[in-house]
Length: 598
Image 1 (spheres, one colour):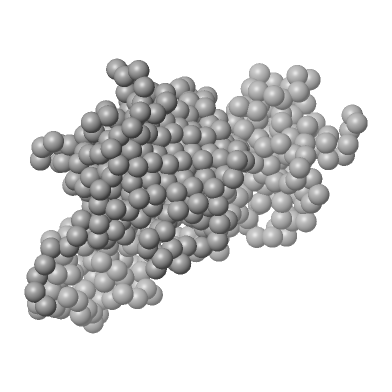
Image 2 (cartoon, one colour; image 1 turned 30 degrees about the vertical axis):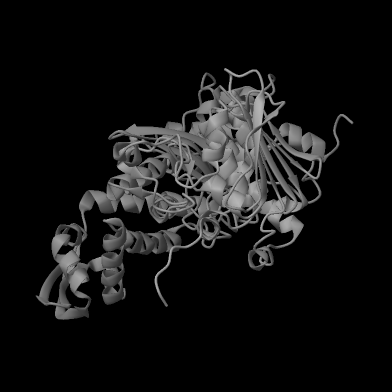
């Protein structure tokens, strides 16, 4: 068959397949256009899951009458003019394919007015190559795009659409992500004339937090840490949930690069590594994070729908994200972070969440340090301190000490040899004795391991490992990484490595598989933490076996010493497996549970 030029209509429909997968794709493109136009309010109306109608109206700068037809033409845009613009894209969209692609598979009406005009103008498109001439239309400053009967002329694509509920769920997810990307713009969403979201513009920290709570739920915000890190020209800020507030799926993960929502493997890998030591197996972290960086360091034209980006310094970005999040999570200890109250059966609707501000600020005025520490504890600890003045377990008993200095309070008793019951200014604290001691022991083992260095042992019989040529080259290039971690690895052939020395702690590990996995990480991300993770896994096992067990009776002095250690230890809010080590029951919650005052 001879080569021939395709009709413009078919070209547009092929292009539509890249950016218009379903109604949610249309909403995404139109919302991004509205934000690029500087809109402060955007209204989204949907009917029948977007299959019948999608309408997006904004109060942005609008489109000039003479540009309306161009806006529905391929490769026409107001956002880039030169190659330099393409290399430093600062807008959400620019490809010039969204509107013509949408117009080629729907009945589209585009209405707009600029500030310099007294009236607006309207143009129609219905999948044909030619569009109507602009006609006058009453319209405020801004733009309205109305899309009806999506895929009416491409039935093969229309049959792949799901139910109305499913399609609207995808639209709602797009609106949620867009709403979190630009706080300054108000966004409303209606489905079949029913209001779903009405989000006002958010200009300060409090209003931004309110929007996050509206989109992600108040429980997320109550269990989230605020992060803000800046280094090497990069800034990461936002909210990350405590490990105890993990999810069974990745439905609460929002990541933005210069205001653009992205799903990136490098980002996901860095986040997983940061949570590795504190997250329960099979669970996923929740976060709303914003990465700001020079536009020239990130390529946003890596995917037709702009879901993915390409970092020019991928390893730098990966390490920055990991170190920032790892540091934030490491600082979590009792009193430094929020923790949602554990709810007793039947009390879910009554018990409020605990926030860092409420833990001590809302404590009842009648409570003092002397009330917090039971008389029996004070007497025993004072006597012990007199006999053993240098012992670290002789916790000072000083009435002038603020309750906030001991967030976990003082032990009252042991429950079934498993839990420690403690009393603080807020109410009742319940501690999992083994889980808490396991984390404390684990962190101490890691610190000692880092201080003393890695003990290595030579292999009596060197181990040969078959790899690819590129992996062998990577092993040579990154040999210093292996040396620092106690390995001695050499290349004895184009596709063969030899391991002559390994860390003592990994003598029972599958070294060949570990080396291959490390090289795979290096090729994908420029670095690897697998060896360190294996070493930590061994230390975690040691910590588990050397920690106090259930039914091990502790004295009040020992219990209080454990509480003080928890307050001083990084990541002590979770055990080595990601489970919480302590929970707080406020007095107000306990009052409600027992219907006091009703």
